[in-house]
Amino acid sequence: MNAFGYHCLSFRMGGDVSNGVSVRPGMQGDEWGCANVHIHSWRETYTGLLDTVFLNQLAANFGARAESWKRILSGTTGSKVRVACEGSEIVGFVNVGPARDPEHEGRGEVRALYLLKAFQGFGVGRLLLAEGLALLAEDGFASAYVWVLAGNPTRRFYEKSGAHFQGESKEITIGNDTVLEEALVWRDIRQVLPEFPVA
Ligand SMILES: CC(C)(COP(=O)(O)OP(=O)(O)OC[C@H]1O[C@@H](n2cnc3c(N)ncnc32)[C@H](O)[C@@H]1OP(=O)(O)O)[C@@H](O)C(=O)NCCC(=O)NCCS
Image (cartoon, rainbow, N blue to C red; front, side, top):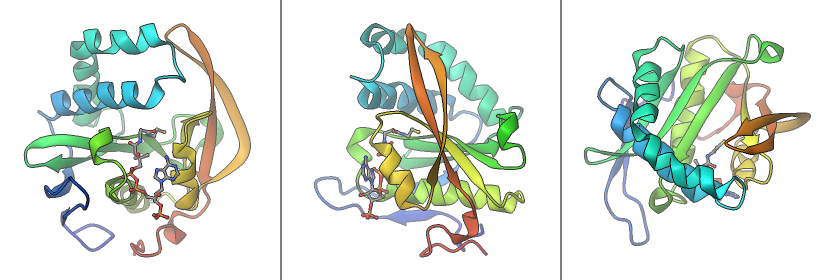
């Protein structure tokens, strides 16, 4: 049982999507499903924000993306992963771990959180974030942060969970683009998502 008091989240979603979605730990063998979500969600999310050619090429690099996920799932990169599944299909994931940025040393980092578009807007992202922050709390982190691409409306999602922009941004290169990322910080992750309090 995790810090939120459940083994596995399972619920029904409204609207046209009626299949049950459950959240479980990511494991070896999930690399193809995670790579699939990663590639599709990047294309769905970043069209208009990132270079179209780069986004169109993502699918061609599926094998490399899966290899990268194999390393992430092996735990050697310090990451812990939770996946959201509809049946046996992975439809989303959260990847958390210790900060990779020296200026955030001592904090946990939400390294990636993505859901296929068809599964967005039903509370699954909130549950994945809660799971990820609980993992960080279990590992002793009191605060956490996430990098969000400037202009990504997802920023509001994180702000609703109690994360704050503290003025920190950095330029990174993705494909042929130089883009701005902004850090959002949860100063005390025990205080976020009060309906799922961290023990
Ligand atoms: C961001 C993401 C994980 C959120 O998951 P989700 O299941 O769609 O979000 P939820 O249904 O759990 O929403 C939780 C709350 O955030 C709000 N929210 C979610 N996405 C939002 C958005 N884009 N803009 C404003 N509010 C948003 C919801 O309205 C909800 O608020 P409420 O509690 O007041 O009702 C998902 O939309 C996603 O994968 N987006 C594309 C990928 C991405 O941008 N990932 C983050 C990269 S840093």
